[in-house]
Image: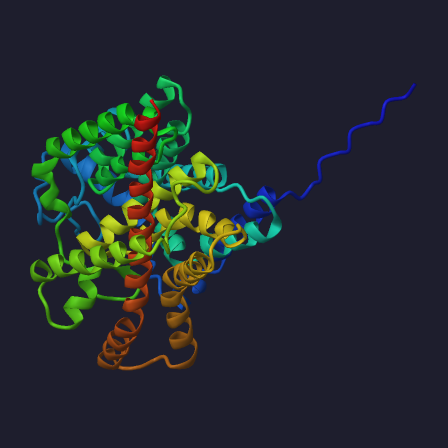
Length: 417
């Protein structure tokens, strides 16, 4: 008797469509450089400018050039100082120099692409199109064009999230190692140690959480003297983000505005958590999906409060984007459903609004005097910064409610025991 042959897997799956769309979109920026200018990305005449800066710092160390904060690197085409920890100087042990920049930059971009496709797995073509829309956003393209080392941190956090979701201690150690390495390289991933609160069951979270807090804290302490390198003032332009931007435009110094930012975002998060409008991050969806979403959200909120950064820092919201998309279709209370929809809309705004603004201005109003450009950008920031604030407050609400849910689960497990 003949057995029925299994049906062949379709050629176009949602995952493959996501790969095709993102690769085609990224290649369009490579083949048509004018697209970069239209969406407000300055090329400076070269690709992989940020990976070059890292390698230039490595070469400078070989030559005995000091790498203190504010000390211009004569080997960098823009004269930038080294803004990261000494951990990057380990690249010299691999024999890497500025001549290897194309290889290094392409490796970082390729690793980022693989991490994205491995951790953002669309279930259908709508999800694939949604994720492609975000991956083609100007902020993501900016990170790729410059081969910024945030791509390396993204890969390490992806490894951390994927490994920690497995209950085996071997995987947990891999996750902790990835988090420690990310913290040592760029400082800001340290708060992501709190993401281990999202492990389930809660009784197995205590050990990894404690080790993550100790590991990230000890690593941050070891590179603390080098943290001053990362403390510099970003020029307020398009494709930048961070709480201090709004206060600067209103005439407040960064040091004064920090506590106001913390208070506003904290009170907003408490209000959302108290009304359960942002519940679900600790229970809904798969463990790996929720854990990655929490890790990314923690990094986004921490970086937004701490200072100003370029828009490619939004890449860490990609995992939250997938979780939010699936939450829209999940049965839940009306107020939570509307909160999720608002979060989705604000997320798209954070990824795309600056690029669309540049596109409209470049196509319809250029050239214009520099003073008018600055005035237009100021008006634009004053209109759009509240949207970023509202999105970050929503993220903080989901995080706070998720942490409280972990505490409630821990108490319930203790009571049952």
